[in-house]
Image 1 (cartoon, one colour):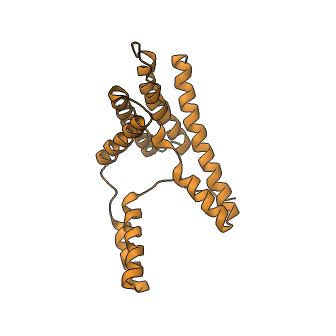
Image 2 (cartoon, rainbow, N blue to C red):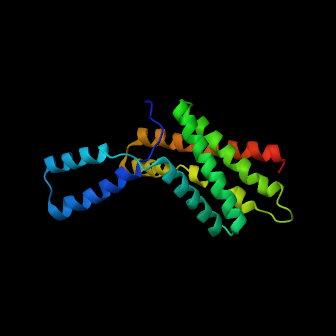
Image 3 (cartoon, helix red, strand yellow):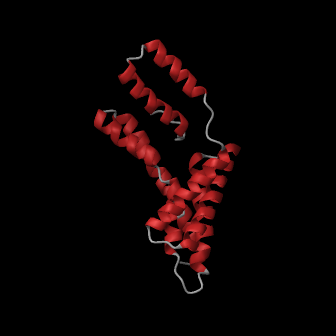
Length: 184
């Protein structure tokens, strides 16, 4: 078996590669032009940290709205997601195990959102609690797992599938810990 790096997605690079794939087809780029463009794309910086935090928070709020949440729920999810992602980024920067980083992020976000459920003053804000951790869902590893299975790369599929399962377990454990604290 092999060690795999923690899944990290650079959306700037993904967007650039998507555009490059269309350029290859439309303009019939040469191999050297493709390599040059790939070198340029890999040198591009990530999006600024604050932009990522705000946009991921807004995405979480949108999921909450789709799930039937109201304005207070959406605000709670925004704050919980923002802080949870910040915790994940900081623990990753310190060098913690990637699954522990996800656990800490899920625990932090669900602890914040759980406060509105626990102290909701007559309203049940379960949508906020349920959607506060959706930003952690391992979509990329799970999609890559099925791609590898279809292509016959069984070893990669198993590794990525176990990684996705471990991420899901860390999210569930973070939610369970905050549920235990609030005695839901």
